[in-house]
Length: 343
Image 1: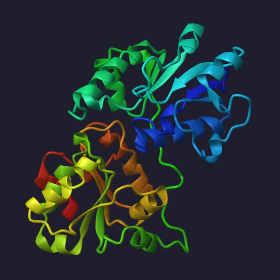
Image 2: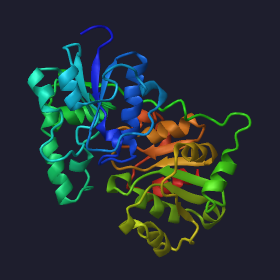
Image 3: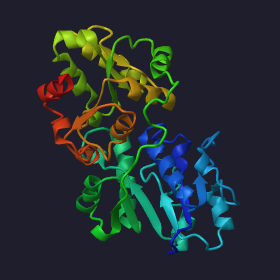
């Protein structure tokens, strides 16, 4: 393979697939953008059955005949000048009858590389049975590709021990936060941005960028918040940046009330764009990621890049991201979590 490989990158996950606007989509865009800056992206392949992106980040606005290929176009136009096919979301659900990688890629003998973010669904109960069935259907793909790349050593070991992938076929590439996440520059007013978009935030706050899935342990953070001294809770709010499914919108507020918390002690933001998310990082007193399991933990890096102090649980990949034992806690020890938040 040449020093700068020529890659075809499967980017259908950024078209609003199963993982929506979650971290996988954001990482896939950043990862492919980094490859594009090195002129390594020969083609980006999209799913013609999904909506086209209205805009792509600047590094991905590549030129050339294969810049916006569907797999059918790739089959027609490829002249053997591609070194590998890269899957950015191996557990992406596609229409029945389709496959990842496409049959043409399999038949061509082109080397296949797949990102692996985590194996969380088989570690923590996060999916209903129908989604787990799709997960188990996709899982063998990772044992068949030529190379698996992971974001952490933690996930690399899972690939070896749980999937049975040979160690020499698994590499760690890590992750990095986008340059977009940084402290405020002179003239920026992140507090005003937060106040305009999230008027329910009225006091200094502790932030967690989280999710509804059980592995995120947001309910554990709410429980720990309730154990803080009353004067701390009166002077601060807990802000959970998260999009909840409709059936869950009342669950966290109900839990907070059941613990004796006031109605405005816990704020759930719903979706926020990246500008507001950055402003939240820039203005929070503390960032907390209390997860039971992660494949990496990108929000920790984003918070720190924005100048926000961060603490995390001491399990899975998170000690690789925040190499500061004094800033970690056992995620199921609510008193330890509350004590570190207060400190």
